[in-house]
Amino acid sequence: MAELQTIVNEIHQALLPRLGEGKVADYIPQLARVDPKKFGIAVIDIHGRVYKAGDCDEPFSIQSVSKVFTLTLALGKHGETTWNRVGREPSGSAFNSIVQLEHENGKPRNPFINAGAIAISDLVMSGHTPREAIGEIVRFVQYLADDETIAIDPDVARSETATGYRNFALANFMKSFGKLDHAVDHVLGVYFHQCALAMSCTQLARAALFLANNGKNPLTGHTVVSSQRARRINALMLTCGHYDGSGDFAYHVGLPGKSGVGGGIMAVAPGRASVAVWSPGLNQVGNSLLGSVALEMLAARTGWSIF
Ligand code: DON
Image 1 (cartoon, protein in one colour):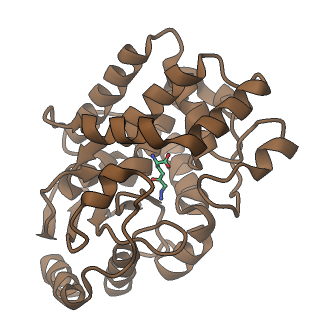
Image 2 (tube, helix red, strand yellow; image 1 turned 60 degrees about the horizontal axis):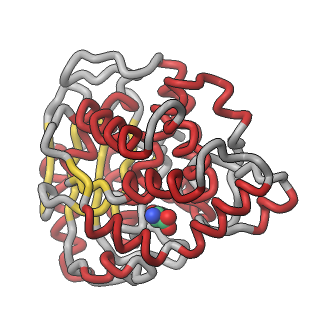
């Protein structure tokens, strides 16, 4: 294998002529303002060595990537009872689909589709006001990345609160089944703010490193979760992290990963490294188009596929 920084540089160079491909998410108005030609990649190995290129230190809206962090928090608070509220099966439907909820008594298929992440936000809230829960999520992510500068972009949170009709529908529907403990607008307040976290590829890769290293962050020495839990979170990312594109991502890339409509993807090569990529243009199922291509190239060049 060539030197990792060489591989990262080559991926960046190979994708430069393609920047702007895909479609930037515009259903959240604030996201539609992002420059579609941004591209960043950061790889951090479990020894702490960093390999990066492009706009890797520019914060962007992590959106659904945040669902990995809130799932980790919810599991820490509620353990296995978390699974009374959400399932662990791929949905095969769009990330914001409502159809399965009706036949499945308001229990979302998994914690990464919007309905499932809203149910997880409700669990993270337990015993907290929305403001406290949001503060806890931000502090948790800062702790994971060992970076206190990480913050929420209030304009993105406001933009989504103003236009999140589909998420209001999902949350109200779940509430009608008695599946949310807290008020719908409070739960969504937490959910919209977690999605509005702004992080760079470097920060995201740092925050994911515990998942590549059996639950322990090698940079700080903190044990975040047990090795069993890290494996299980990775299993969920592999099967559900890219919605109805999860099978395709597993086929082409072969790494647990989580995408967001801001164009970010966080991926984990267990025992080796964590990776984050950012390119705002999305494919048809709402995952970063060039981000997926970059990860496919990285997996091919490194042999890091888990298969
Ligand atoms: O709720 C939403 O629609 C967004 N805040 C997050 C969706 C998302 O990132 C889907 N990912 N590809």
